[in-house]
Amino acid sequence: MARLFGTDGVRGVANTELTPLLAMQLGAAGAYVLTEEHSYRPTIMVGCDTRISGDMLANALMAGICSVGANAVYVGVLPTPAIAYLTRKYKVDAGVVISASHNPVEFNGIKFFNGDGYKLSDEIEDRIEAHVKEGNRGLPQPTGSRVGKIKYRRDAREEYINHSMRQIDTSLDGLKIVVDCAEGAAYQTSVETLQELGANVIALHNNPDGTNINSNCGSTHMEELCARVVMERADLGLAFDGDADRLLAADENGRVVNGDEIMAIIGNYMKERGKLKKDTIVVTVMTNLGFLLMAREKGIKVDQTKVGDRYVLEHMKEIGASLGGEQSGHIIFLDENTTGDGLLSALHLLEVMKMSGKKLSELSSIMETLPQALYNAKIPNHKKDAYLDYPEIKEAIEGLENKYAGDGRVLIRPSGTEPLVRVMIEGKDQEVIDRDAAALAELIEKTVF
Image 1 (cartoon, helix red, strand yellow):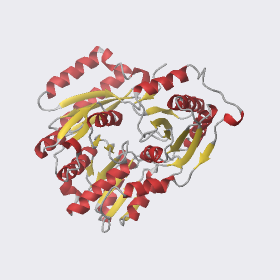
Image 2 (tube, rainbow, N blue to C red; image 1 turned 90 degrees about the vertical axis):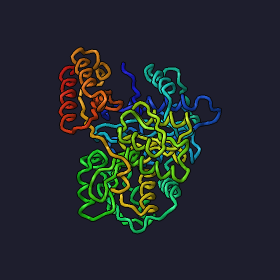
Image 3 (cartoon, one colour; image 1 turned 120 degrees about the vertical axis):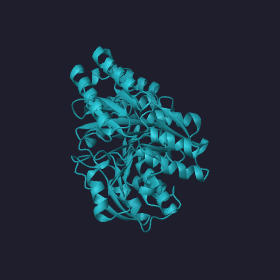
Image 4 (cartoon, rainbow, N blue to C red; image 1 turned 180 degrees about the vertical axis):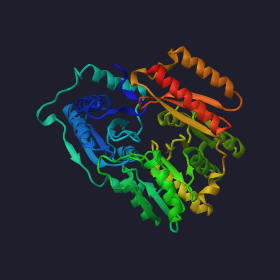
């Protein structure tokens, strides 16, 4: 049996791979492992995104939590970063989010936070997984008054919104913003926060029906947002993903501004004001080379980690950094929250625009983005870590590495959340790198599948 936990919790197609039974087992095992040293009845907070399978899985998960004698607090649809923050705010023992982030509606996921609002270590995940694989044998089975209960809390959204607004020192009066909520968890929090701060908000894809999350919208489908910004003559556009832990933007000309550029803008602003701890930004190996050149020019140190916001966070905690993230838009402000937070990213970007009086296109020119090509090879989950076992694939990769040595780079990695191997090539000529990346992805797909 393959490892259940990926880089961002347990994910799969809801009701076939991620079944209610598995959700219940994870709820029981997770509640036990995360609270086994407590002498009191522990409490676990549970929230979800807008997927139709969320209710099914949340209720199964909470049944598992209650079955080992723990209590659950259900806060309903909220962004992942809201659950991370509220877990600490309400001093509960752990938090769980039912979400598959940017994935299509048929997928769902379960990710845990400890009582401090941090994603779990590999060691803790392994302990939970071991119980699940053993059928949760030996876990407590309380009866009578010792069985856990569920409390439903509806005021949590306002607490997260208020916390977010407190993190910037300016109103947003005079800004016209197009916001793509991805039919996901940001559909209320993002719009309400920006309006409360005085912005003129044009909301797109903020009518979730359970089946339309991430469907041709949000941070993975920016075309409509970019066009709407230009049509509305807005100052910028903001795009969230399904669980609102990532953010991408569009400038006033309709050009996409990615996570690297957003971190460059905010990081430089923080450094100038003495708020960038260690004068360091933590990023991944996927970060554009242009970001590294910008940082060198601005006197900012850059530490790189493996791909995955959990690895960025671990390194930030290790060195005491205040800012880190990924090109995909996961950006962590560790002094303010313990995970990637799309709303905080949006607010800090807007703060720089307001305080500087500059347009987003001008601010994003702080770095020159080198051409990148990213292609996905779709292969079965159980084979995605074995692509280098095939000589023809290994030989093709080595050939490309030699070709781009000194003028770019080649990065191949299995996805931590989907049945994909991702191929990224960075170089000087977009047409050439597109052709080479597409050919390699096709080779991997045909060979491994």
